[in-house]
Amino acid sequence: MVHGKLEVLLVCAKGLEDTDFLNDMDPYVILTCRTQEQKSSVAKGAGSEPEWNETFVFTVSDDVPELNVKIMDSDAFSADDFVGEANIPLEPVFLEGSLPPAVHRVVKEEKYCGEIKVALTFTPAAETHHHHNHENEEKGYSSWN
Image (tube, rainbow, N blue to C red; front, side, top):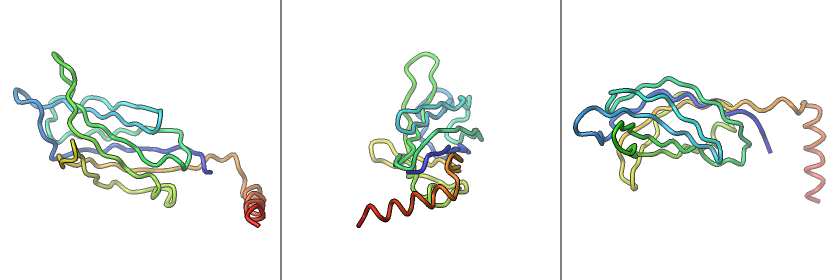
């Protein structure tokens, strides 16, 4: 099991369905990784093409299957509206170490409603030295016999 930190660069979103008919949406994002939750700033009046360029760091292990990204519309006078969400699989970043900004589909009730661009970087915790890992691997193999 690999532990480490997952760095999420939230770049931008586009093609979002504007839930606010009177004025442009004020979108923000809630990022959830298992039990950890973080919030982006509100892109005031950005409507359907907000840009954030913000980085969030989560502590993860490689058994966390995905990052959930919910796009919300901040409303001053009523409850914030749910715009859509994307589930980003984390397995590729655990294998590669870092993934350049990629576009993920945003869906609401299984309907496509825009896209969000996110870059991911995974840095394994440096508590295990290579030498140490090697021993673990050997132990791992012997336990199969």
